[in-house]
Every structure is written in C-alpha cells, then in structure tokens.
Amino acid sequence: MSKRWTPKIEPEKNVVEELSKAINLNKVLTTILVQRGIATFEDAKKFFRPQLTDMHDPFIMKGMDLAVARIEAAITSGQKILIYGDYDVDGTTAVATVYSFFYQRYPHLDFYIPDRYTEGYGISFMSIDWASNNGFSLIIALDCGIKSVDKIAYANSKGVDFIICDHHLPGDEIPAAIAVLNPKQADCIYPFKELSGAGIGYKLIQGYALKHGIPSAEVEAFLDLGAVSVASDLVPILDENRVMAHFGLKKLKQNPNNGLKALLEAYPDKPEFGVNDIVFFIGPRINAAGRIADAKDSVRLMTADTMEDAKKIASQVNQHNNERRGFDQTITEHAFELIENDPSFLDRKSTILFHNEWHKGVIGIVASRLIEKYYRPTIILTESNGMATGSARSVEGFDLYSAIEECSDLLDQYGGHTHAAGLTLKLENLPMFIEKFEMVVAKNIVERSLTPEIEYDMEIPLRTITPKFYSVLKQFSPFGPGNLNPVFMSKNVWDVGDATIVGNNHLKLSLTQEEGGRIFKAIGFGLGAYYDKVSQGISFDICFTIEENHFNGHVNLQLNIKDILFR
Image 1 (cartoon, rainbow, N blue to C red):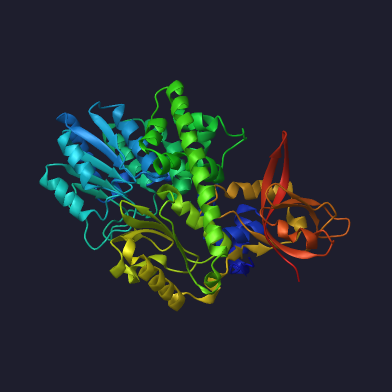
Image 2: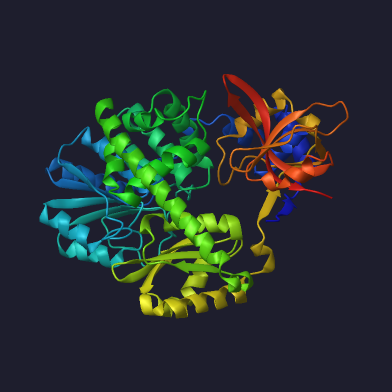
C-alpha cells in the first residue's frame, strides 16, 4: 500500500540556534527537540534527565484528600475494601499496584476484575451485588467508572461507597462517588491530564504514603507496573508518564516484581528494556488472560509473593497468549478471505465483517490487522449472548466515535473514543447498521485519510548517522505517543548488492548514499515486494528510524526502513 510522506514543520531557526548553543548539541538533534516543544535549557534538562521529584503533588488532584480520608476511615474501623479494575493491561496493573500497596498494611482487602463476556467493560451491577453480599463497604475503582452514574447510584442505595480513579473523558454528569480522581474533570487543576488508569492509582498510593509518612521507596516499588501501563495504554509519554516510564523501565530490567520477572524469563536478555518490549511482549501476555480466560490470572501474576507462584501463573498466562495468537491468526486469515472474495469491497470506504463463531476476545486485534492491510475504518463483529458485539478501529484523521454515534438508533450499546470503540446491537439490525455506517463514513471521510501517512522529522544525509549521534538520540527515549522515535528521510540511496528477503517477507539491505561511502545495514519489515527493484542497483528514497541490532553478542547500528520511494 502506498503511503504519504509528510515532513514535520520546521521550527524557527533562532530558537534552534539558541537551544543548540545552550545545551551544546548539533542542530539536527536540536531541531527535533524543538519540534517536540523543548525550547529552553530547563525543558531539555527535564527531558534528558527525568527525576522522580518532577512528579506533581498528588493532593493537587481534585478529590485526593477525600479519597485518602475515606480509606483511612475504612482501615480504622476494619471495613472490607474491594480493589476493582478493568480486564485490560491498564486495569490489571492498576489493581495489582493499589491492592499490593494496601495489602502490605491491611488484611481486609480483595480485588475484583469483571468478566469480559458476562459483565463487559467497567463497573457492573453484578459486581456491586457481589461486593454488597460479601460485606464490602468501600470499592476503589481503577481505570473505569467516570461514566457509571447509574451504577454508583445503585451502589449508594446498597450502602457501598466508591472511590473512582479514572482517566477517561467524563460525561456531562459526574457519578456521586465519595471521591472522583480524574484530572480530565473540568474543575480539576492537576497540571498533567494524560495519566493512565494505573497512573491515577499510583497517585492515590502516593497521596496515602505522603499523609502517613511512608517512605517514597515503598511507592516507587510499583514503577515497573506503571511503565507497563503507560506503554500498553498508549498514553502520551510526556511529563509524569515519561518519569514513570523512564524509571519503570529501569526497574523492569534491574529488579522487576515476581510476576513480570517470571514472564521475562522467556524473553531474550537485553542491556535495557524499551517501550516496544512491553508493547510486543509483556502487554499481550497480560491482556491474553482477560481475552481467553480470566483476567484475575494477570492480577495474581503481578501480585505473586514468591517466584514459585509467579512461574506457575506465568506458564498459564503464556498458554492463554498462545491460544490468543491461534485465534488471532485463524480469524485474520478468514477475514482476509471474506474481503478478497467480495468484489464490492473495493468500492467501500469502511470494512465491517461479522461471523457468529469468531472469538470475542481477539476481534479488536483482528480489526487492527485489517487496518494495516486495507487502511479504512474497520469494525469486526461476532455473536455473544444472542447479540452482535464488535470492536472498531479507525484511521488517522477520522472520528470513529462520531460515526458510530450517528448510527446509534441501531445500537443497544456503544462507547469509546476517536480511534477505537466497542458496540453491541441486535442481530436483525446488522444489515442496516453495515449500510448506514458505510454511508456515514463515505460522507465524512476525506480521501487523504484512506492513505496511511508517514510523518518524518527531517531529511538527513546518511553520513550524519554516527555512533555519537545515535548515543544522544537514544537519550530521547522512552519513545511512544507524544515522543515517537524520530523518523528520518534520506534521498538517493542504493543497495550495494546483497539485498535479500528474510523471515516473513522482510527486506534486508546494505545501503549507501555515496560512492565509496559508509555502508549501513537496513531492514524493512514486510517490504519484500520491493526486492526486485532494489536488487537492480537503482537509487531510491527511504523513510527510516535508527536502532541498535543485537545479535550473537554484537551490537550494530541499523536503519529500520518504514517505506521506500522510487523516483
């Protein structure tokens, strides 16, 4: 699929020059800093040298004093407290963090994760009944609850108090909980609005620790879980999230909790971990329990007291992940087949597929796979409890949630945001929904949103790339939303003669830009289709990131090619 290459806007030269002098850094790297909003010495210092002291006072967050006071009252009077969270990585890491912290200090505690299939996302009436019947008078809800107005009212009628710790956008009405911790509330003055759900949980235990003189090290022990949450939930890696990711990744390498350590035993040893190690290895395994079996397994893994227990649970979680991968592959291949056998698909602006036997736990992943191949707003649906239930994913620049909202007359339930959503509808409404959604997308989507875009930071000659250059670039990490790995563009490069296809259609190259110049090893994942042209020795342009390739104890710089353009 062809891609659009778009350069980032060049910053003002005088700002780049002043910062370059102030921090003694070359202008290429300084330009990238300024593009990211780092314009002063102090900005750069915080960016390159994050400190735990950069984190904000938790009591600035609206409701923190009320939340801590309610927990104190529960502990003083011996009330049972339930730690509640969603079944994804953010929810389960949040529960593991808050549960572990308080369990070290108070025994009348349990945790609860709703079942994806019988209860669905967020707070359920079933969970409130369970809590009431089992004598819990306080529920701390993590990564959910900000829109659960009816559920909290029901809990209040049963004498069950709630503290809500959520990071999703609030609705018009805030639930009547004892305390609501969410920086996105309109009247909350907390300076950083983009914490993950586990990040809000971390602030709660930080607030409690400050109030009770508990050493900060006992809170910082949960930074590895915080990093897993930040990376997996795709929140911007800025401000407190950057601090949490920076120190959490260090802890993940040096001294992870038992559960994460048990998972990492099956992972190649590396000098340090990055966000991608979480996104592609740890996150999917933690998620798999909730997709295939019971997300409580993930919490049990991350709260395991001994390595022996952690290894047993890690084995189960890995098995769940293997099953998830099997479902994922089978359903994706089936989806591709349905599309290729449908001539009308070529003229549609959206993709909607339904099959009553597809596994509900992986349809979101399948939707993302179809976006990668066909790049159009996509909804994958299956049958569950007599209804059609689906996961939706969008393309850049198209508001998926608004499009689904326009079809709400055909839906029983829906929720989400611009790029991802979930929905449920009656089976008999499915044909009408498919047509209406297609009509809405076709009416609103602009043509450029149907072509994937590569936004590159700047054009550079390959000779710019030196070990010293990369050693500074590496300090831009951790990379993720809000601070993506810089993408460069270089023109008129060519392969020196050893282009080959490796693995699953990946293109391996040795590139140069000058006769007799330095040769750079390069890999283009999924770019095997370009082999015939590049092997002819003709020149082309590339968009790429720079990375270290670790192989057999050797470390080499490598270009990771995102796209190739022949002129």
